[in-house]
Length: 277
Image (cartoon, rainbow, N blue to C red; front, top):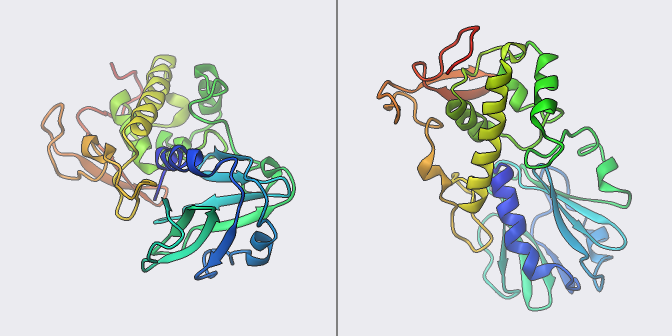
């Protein structure tokens, strides 16, 4: 699934090409995604200028004067910049033309969606209860410490709770915990302040690095230029079950946690009540 760095990479890739451009045409090849594509509302936007391309958590927000389009890439969705007359690929579902530039959506699994809202998108049910962005000032060490102290849930589960912080998906939660030397099963309220500080630093560092390197190479994810990201080449634990840890040569372990596979090194990330130094 595209995570925050992939979605931010997409935003950075498409924004210079379509922002402040007028929508000239809408083509819906297949409206049957997670939610039906609102073709009539999209066609009503033809002639309108796209005012901004923003991201909130894993959602892309395309704002026009009349309404805002909320786009989620789902499990395998991707957006790319192409030309209006470029050949449609299998699993291409819709395109928005901005003169000679086209924004086209591709999604083999059809779990993504495009919806429209006339009200403030921050008030939409998908966005209204979201926590702070992990790269924002609001996501401070003190904020994280206070949130974790309220919860007995495993730290890995807390990191993926969008009401605490948005956009830390499975890959980056596993990687951040490894670099912070924290076991994914450790209860959130048992982290020391030193561990919390270390985890906070690693979350920001790894997300910034992933954005700079274009996100993770996931099965179907492509950057807007049609090329895969390459941060996955540097992953320490995710997807490496039974392979040797790069730091200690012990095998990487995998457990099911919160319905997701969690990867960690039992030697580097010990499960105990004290601080892991």
